[in-house]
Amino acid sequence: MQPSAREKEFAPALLLAAPQPLPADFPACLERALQGGEVAGVIVDASGAEAQARLSLLAECVTRCHQHGAALFLLEEPALVIQTGADGVLLRSAEGLEAARRLLGLERPIGVIIARSRHAAMEAGEAGADWLLLGEEEPFARRLALVRWWSGLFVLPCAARCETPAEAAALLKAGSDFLIPPVAIWHHPEAALAAYRGLLGPPRPARAAC
Image 1 (cartoon, helix red, strand yellow):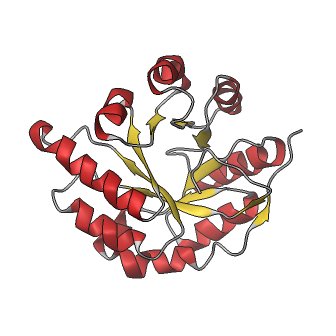
Image 2: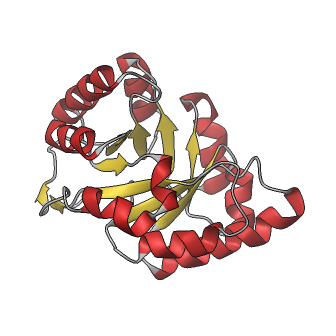
Image 3: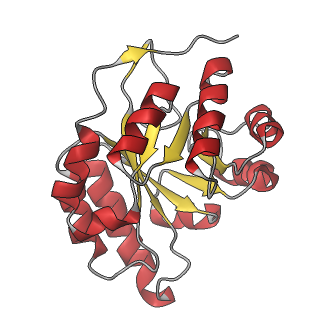
């Protein structure tokens, strides 16, 4: 299930943040990570990739993701989404939402990163974001509080980073729809992701609009 979607019953899932800069052998590593299932999408910052190689590298990542029912989101590069056939974009703020929507249309989902501001989260939702990454670079306690507040009031899906399975469990209990495990999982993705997959549990009722 992609981050922009919501059904009557909703199964929490993983979002994977790719390492940066993107290594040349990343598609093979990505394949190993996706084989276990329960990955809704992959977030890629392609800014550090070699310019001549990144289009083919990203196209291969898109293919791997689609083979496993996952979406690929590019950080801050909506035009590159079109070039590579990626599924959507993740913006660092809501300021670029209007321009990204004009370029990508309504079918490609747009996520927005929110640091600490509840007001910024509400503004991004009102501006048409499809999902939010909450509490970016905030201490865990503040991130958890932001997720709990958002999920208690709003339908729009939210994601949050977690550094450990214990943090993941707390975020799920608070209502996070998507978990972003630490980048360290790429060293041994099969074993590292097993602990997070084991926490996801069965589908739960979708949040009702207030």
